[in-house]
Length: 429
Image (cartoon, rainbow, N blue to C red; front, side, top):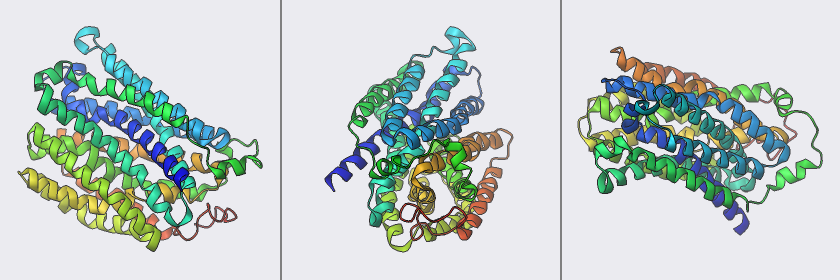
């Protein structure tokens, strides 16, 4: 038990650092967008910054395949170590990239390159960490333990916001943040990633990987994954709605509260951070519930409630003018979205056998997140820029409704898991 808890703790801390590094970009883009994208319209500047945020998602499928293959062939530990080291390099690149005023168009190009490095790292982190946390957990508590992937994922975002909040309130003025202070969180992230790398060196390999290595074939991970087409499609389908909703209520919400609701900078940070704390607390509660009643009821809860309530929720959120009201509506949204976020990692891991699990979780997920999650903010800001902001509400609803169909049709992996019964063939949809 002690070894398991240590492995989960170290694996989770590394995951938190990776997501902090990745989301520091979103948290501080309100301050550094003007340094890379000259102009007078803040919406256009944020749209340009959001496009580069989406660029980080383009290479996530490559990262999912590369690091997933590494994890399936050479071990979960080695893949986790390499991914966090690469994230450190990406954060350091952003910290030292000169502004547009200094090097011209090379500035956004270098920023985009750094985001590609971070995206490659994060593409590998998700599948490998989901696989690792699921494999080190015991059968009766997999939902609970694996929920800590999103606890630390949200915790990474929250940490980025807390750094922003501290800098805003205690140390720097808004002008200082825009001039140079926005570089501080990326320096912090690069250093934290190095620490996480050192910690991950002491991780033990999972028993399931060690056992499977004795009978491992030389077949490539992609070839092995092609033997599970239905499982791949299930990962894509169940991820679509969840990832779009997740990025709506995290990365885009900070801009929404500032540009659409009209909150101040400090209110925006406080409301966003408060909603993330609430979401963080929900993850293990929902995860533990899935260990009792199954994964499928929670997914259907998210799909059905999200389809019915997303449009009115976002209209109500847009119409409020108080920080307290904005927090209340965001908390309501998280009660719904947590049905997906808390258990999506374990569901995906339970779909695939050991020899292809990390690739099966990471690659189709990364492709789907690149298409739907990474573009959510850009699509929302584009609708706003052309004067039809509310069209995004209907888009989000349609994507969630599509995932609902998958939730209803798929098997409940809590009771039919490839981890416990590897003999279950991929055709058992």
